[in-house]
Image 1 (cartoon, one colour):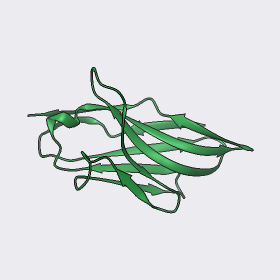
Image 2 (cartoon, helix red, strand yellow; image 1 turned 180 degrees about the horizontal axis):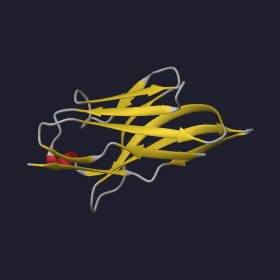
Image 3 (cartoon, rainbow, N blue to C red; image 1 turned 90 degrees about the vertical axis):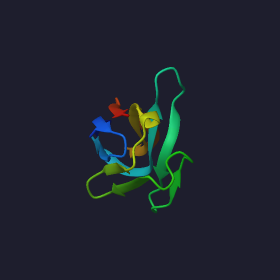
Image 4 (cartoon, rainbow, N blue to C red; image 1 turned 90 degrees about the horizontal axis):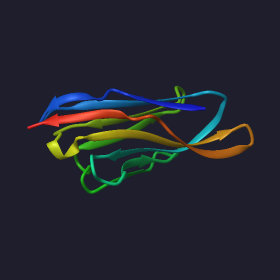
Length: 118
């Protein structure tokens, strides 16, 4: 099982980006999916997560600006980011709890860089 994040890049403050996370492999079912980020010199932090039932949770810094969604038919998760600020600059990581054969494991993707210029 692998997770691959994409969609990062350089954007001006106030702009938007959409991150995508693709899960691949012999997946039985995906439970919780989440986006984390890590800025230089800081700890990794939760940005948003979404349950299989569609319940969402956001960090205070993301509320009102970011939207997490998922497409279980495609084993995908998305993070729509709007009104981006320089402080959103970080490496964004996809995370998921995935049933693989008979076990539930937590997986991380390699991350995608988001840089917001002022």
